[in-house]
Image: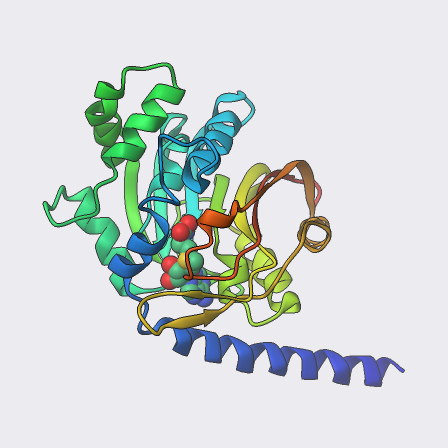
Length: 285
Ligand code: SAM
């Protein structure tokens, strides 16, 4: 029986490996500018509507990073893509912020904004909105942009499917907090690969540290550019929380957003979005 179980485990691992290689191929033509246009402009980023996706996400992140239990030395954002909205609240309560992505074109897009390149994406409406959530004048957005640029210490390559997702020595020590938005479900070929990737990513986090995750519910694909159809593993709350528990987390908060019909703009088949806050248990499993 033990031999049979071992054989099944090996076949599962080989299956994940083949799926992971296929996902890596799907990502090669990913177009950061198109992805930003699809997801980070109106109607999905309409700051005059609180039921628009981006204001909902920014509100969740603001609440998480001002509750007082999450702060510290280093925050690592896993699978940043070409986006920065997910760290606009966290950058205020961490001394160092490390951005990461699998693709060089996404790391280059992040570096362009960090270098204040005039051709980079305009995050100023996002910065203004988060300043307002923080009780500051929207005009403080330039200070917030300067704060973000000053705390980002690195933009690193990452592969969540490797047991050590970052290159050896890339981080001086484990992070105090991980943020990850729309990454694990969008890069994993199936549910076992999602859980395995979560286990890998968790090695970057200190025991007792926090994980703040945003993701797609019941999505099966999204567009990473014109004609770039990227498969997504459909997940639900029961699966995500079971996966977190299996990887040694206590789930502190889980909330969901259901997409209004006019947010379905033909760039994916996402049904809803989850936001969660979890804490890595002090005793390793
Ligand atoms: N975090 C961004 C957001 O909130 O919009 C981007 C999410 S995008 C749906 C998924 C990201 O995962 C892409 O930036 C992609 O380059 C990255 N990715 C693809 N394969 C990966 C891997 N094996 N490990 C880590 N990230 C990966």
